[in-house]
Image (cartoon, rainbow, N blue to C red; front, top):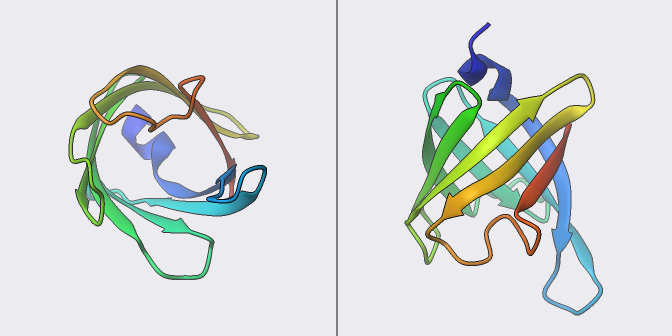
Length: 108
């Protein structure tokens, strides 16, 4: 299996909501055609679409539709039975990856 195929799938996590202390679900769909879709609130509506390239344990993500920031983010990623962890190497979009620069996803 290539690293790219490991990232492909349906993922979920919880992220901070607009109200302080609130959390909302985020569903991430990573497709084998090098695209991804983000559904904030898990309501079935895609808010952000993007593209990615992966090589080894690194993935470069870039939002292309629905986002205020279209800069590239470089992350290392690891997939195991429990889910996927993406750790920020660098990101042109402030705030993506959260304050710790780590995103942890469970399989959907």
